[in-house]
Length: 321
Image (cartoon, rainbow, N blue to C red):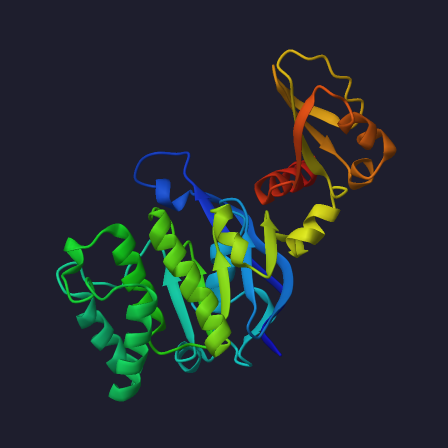
């Protein structure tokens, strides 16, 4: 079932510039029209984890604001859980959660529990349900020692985890995550990823994630890539890899100083006792590859796929080229 559906969403902003000075400067301002989104269409199925990627200024935040009802588009339509986000914003708010990594809901001087209680009253969560949900998140995110302490005494990772809990205590059907792990330690990142996967498995929660951190994308079923307001890609990492010929990275370790004629692929790096090459899947299965490995000077080898970071970089180069 589709829980998010966007069709031809477009949004533009006026960007003002002031060249003149003096009393009348503000009256003489000129402006340019910048298209933040240009006919963006996609859908998200119930229970999916979708990662939205793109450079700064690609339109990610604008799209999130439209889907959560903070702003309306210039043209196009969108539905979230069957509701029009900007016309039925209050009704939608009870079924979605929004986690903003750069902004916290936790009060600096109060224990996180006080914020949780505040959220309970806002979302009208019955006390028994609230207690059950709180126990679930406290155990899942390992917050038992910290959630009753003032936020100012917590580490950044602990604050981010508590902020995550405050945004989803009402058990929303869809959670929008904007840079949820920015600046936090590896252990806290792992806890948040674990919570996302557990909620999806246990409650069928849908997650829509925007991030610049490639490691966060590892849990996504699908990725969307925005480029200058356009939807540049919509698919899986494997589908993105196929766009570039299913390339592999072949690393060969050989006896120090040995001269080896590799003869396949593109040499990425060659050192005193190691070489890295970019090869195709067909070359890996070829007789030539088997002959190379038969060389007595070769000690070991490994084959790996291109990383997501490299694939996205190549996609940007193709778009800009």
